[in-house]
Image (cartoon, rainbow, N blue to C red; front, side, top):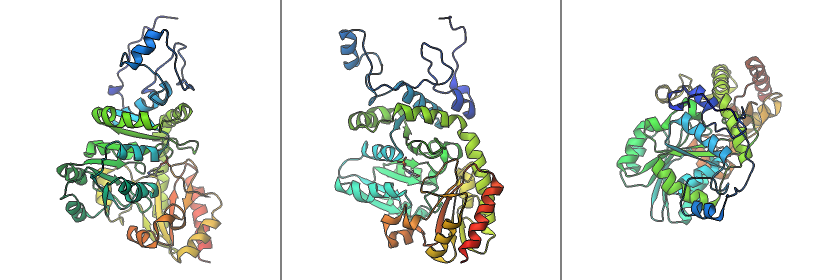
Length: 403
Ligand SMILES: *Cc1c(COP(=O)(O)O)cnc(C)c1O
């Protein structure tokens, strides 16, 4: 094989777009251009001594894909470089990432303070699963600074938030809540799925741990599940890694390979989706069939100033209330001809859902009411179709919604 005469690159000097194309690439002996897919569960040793050494804490190497895999490691390194975190671990799904990030550090007797506006399964973990293990919880409305101050006047181990929230696009002031969390002895864990790593940088605002469902914008083409946890090396290596290794929510190497490719085009896709989401939010706000539009980029959003301060763009999701409740909302969804009815988000295909009867059905009417989710509420994930086609589809469906 030819001697490599190129200087080894220093990814820390690269702009984000370059990190997403080249970061983490680790070529095999075949010098392939594209990242290799190491579809292997195990690894072999040259001798019995070498095997014994690796288990006795010898030189770092791959021993089993539940512990680590070269393709998964490339994905972790690429995302780590984008986020600017000290360490990253990938998981099989976003929920595996959320669960591991919380369970790896919580103990019986601890207290978690969480935003009320959480993804449905995250809400289940905090309000139903953690209490079984003696972990107390308290919910705070995302934008209620007085509520955060009161809840964090008492010690807590973890503060867990999502911003913007699903589906009502409410924001948490990450910098202010991070300061309160730290004063209460807690670490701040941010589910950054809706903002994507490009539009919001929680670690720079004081968060300790960031989690992703890579299933959403990072794949961005509706193909596979994945998740990731990013934070300080000490947390990842001492607390998170033993939890992951021994409980097994490992990302499949195949999914890691798909997601690596997703990262290469993430900025292009998110920028285009944000542009269309902006246009759609403005269009909907001007329609009489729409009672309310929730989009952090609109001047009418109650936290528009906070959105400008902590986000580099308003995101790719628009939530709105169709006047006329569930019947009108269902007429609207059934009349869409381009946008699909689906509970997924962040996809190249535009997707719409009715949270009250799908993603947030389990919560019950009272809790939905507290979160602001109504019978006419629709959540739209804006895709990559031509903006004019999307606006025409929405206009047609709004005509149908009038009944
Ligand atoms: C989708 C999602 C999750 C869960 O991710 P999966 O990959 O579906 O397990 C968690 N949080 C938010 C905000 C999400 O949108």
